[in-house]
Image 1 (cartoon, helix red, strand yellow):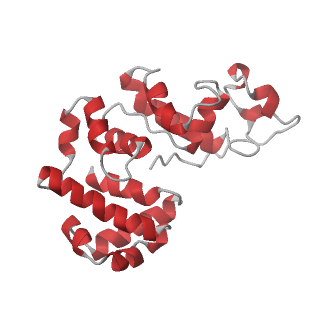
Image 2: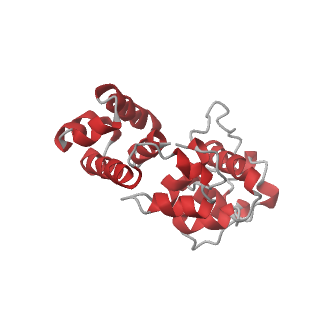
Length: 209
């Protein structure tokens, strides 16, 4: 779970390839979390530079690790899975720089808890389908979407929405005429392009982190 937390911090404002390379560099150079804490910050910046925004991410990662150690005496946060969901969210979000999206990713993907993570794809698709209002922010959408579906379906809901956003309901020129939801979509008439025969990117897998 702690690795998932650090990986998610590295994922901010970058793509999956750069994120994964930065995390691999981090774990190869510093096998333990204590080494990451103890290393001079400028060196950590160089190690994770491929992930982008390294000057901001390096001190944030070190601060999060220090806070976890101070609170728990260890670098293991798997105990969160035993807490009520609301309490686990509060615990994570009181760490430096950890918001609703990062919290949702860690709790859902690393700990199997019914927490909803909302990224730009999910936020966009949810607004176009009117699952949330047009003025609802991504941070606000977490609780709304999570509360709108049975807990055992939250994980699948996340994966389906993000996949749909990447393959079909794209930010620019969405594939409305190839969308299986177009008959129920209140945005279809506004976004569909007449005569558009493009097909979804069948090979594009969902990578929620």
